[in-house]
Length: 390
Image (cartoon, rainbow, N blue to C red; front, side):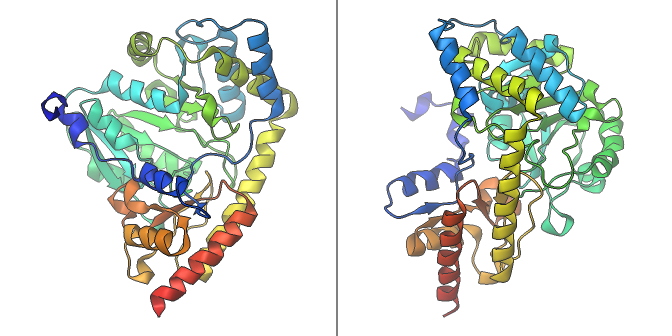
């Protein structure tokens, strides 16, 4: 049956994250630091709004773009929280941020177009570019520079085939952010080479150092930026599968057509839940989100300090809910470290290579789990490192 498989699908590598999920799910007593989803339950008020919508019989399709009130509130949210100009007419409610990424790339990529992907990065970017007919081009960001994309790195990666830049800060897997000044520094390069920016801001609310700055809020950049986000991370709504994308009109039109034919609309019950999350946030200043952020920041400091004390150099996360320690001092690659740790101590971390070649000697650890679990995991990791030394 292999002859029926198209070349792009056949050449995709299996997800390095899912491999470890599958192993851990069948291992008694295992601790997983691999899961990229909040350990908090969706707030009751959001769940209750969904229940009430079902009780009222609101179970039909919505319009393709999503509920008008939700789109209006998304734009208000982006404007008030992050100073991003957004228009409900060019806002699309999607099945998670993942659909928004896929739609954007399919809407813009011609065969051979190069899309710049700063690494380490979320595992889906490069495969999504390839599936869209484009060519992903890695731009290696390094810990010594806080994993920030520099103008020099950006300029060096651009060729006549370069069409767009994927920008994803706060970053998965590193926990890095880009400040206003750092974003402003790359804008002249973007403008000089007429690049589109695809800004994945799913972790925007989970920023511990100052407030998240979107490149779409700077110097007329909204006209060349596709803003992607959603409710999964900040509102603990991963399973609801609801995200959104705001794009320049021409790109939005192309994305909308693809969405119409492939998805039709995001689940109605999830849209009602998402609208309730925003409505409550406008009322109470997003208090629930702020509480989660405070707890994540505490856990991140704990893990980073613990890894550094073990001799595993670790960048202090400034956003998201991951740390990305280097395991080079052990003499192991990230894959060797992760496999050895899982076999020896039943702790699952994700090899950094899953996030690009820049992560070869790193592992990613999610701290979206309890402090008790994190403390036990650190004890086990310490025992593993001691066993390597002997």
